[in-house]
Length: 260
Image (cartoon, rainbow, N blue to C red; front, side):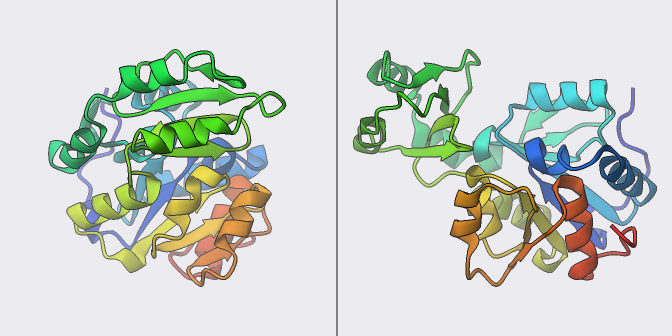
């Protein structure tokens, strides 16, 4: 199976690249809007690049593409920015070592220490996936004890609460924003040709990293508060995929479907 149509210009040579979150963003909005966006991407692959920037792990992302018919990305910034990888023609995901060396060094195999420190912490339930450079929990806001934040900070890591239901422990200074900037530079993509799209607080660092960005219409209040005053962030009225198309049109980044 070849998941990428070939031949295709290098992603750096294309007119536009979408770097998008999945849940609530690329997967959000009305079914017709999603279908329109996905079809438009596939019809314009020679001039449109696609990067998924998500809290999800690569295995989940590829499963979604296979089972739900999403357009296949060419690169992935996954695991809340701790994975930076290329998607090969046969659909397997390969981390880019030169871009992950610093991430691995900063994390320094901290997973067991973090899990031990937060074991049994009120309001946190460890997610079962053995992530490489992060530890993630489901968060119950009604029972969550805020002292988890101090515990993580004292260990020298960053914490991130997203959608008021996820708690991530990340390597210091690593998140979606720095990682997408690093990938864009590595690939030689002109920054002005990139649009970052998101809807929750774990997208904040990506939306304010200096690239063109859109907070889609269904974005959580905490994200909207964080992007207030940031001139590079477009606030869409339409939700999810519709908000992405709205921003492409409003920012004149490509000939997106009109009326989106």
